[in-house]
Image (cartoon, rainbow, N blue to C red; front, side, top):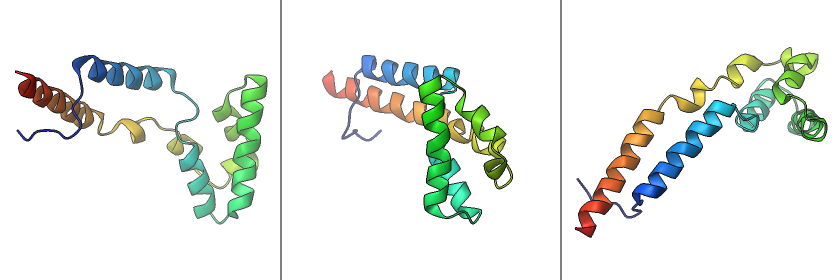
Length: 116
C-alpha cells in the first residue's frame, strides 16, 4: 500500500466518520443547495433569479426556523421547474461513502505503519 501524503490519526478518522453520519442522520438542509441552484439555472432560470429564489427560502428557513426543503417544495416557480425530491435525495451524496471510508481507513493504516 502506498504511503499517504495526508495521514490521519485514528481519532481524526473516527471524527470524520461520526461527523458524516451525523450530517446524514440530520439530513441537514444545507446539503444540496448548490445542486438546487444549478438545476434551476439548467432549467432556464436566470442565475440571479435562481439565487434570489433559493436565498429567499434559505433566509426564511434560518430566521423563522422553518424547513427549507418544505419551503422549496411549496414554491410553484421552483417545484414547477425541477424535481425537488431528486435534488435533495441523500443517496446522491452518499453513493460512494463506503469507498471514501475505505480509503480513509487505508490512509490511517498507512500512517500507523509509518509510526511503527
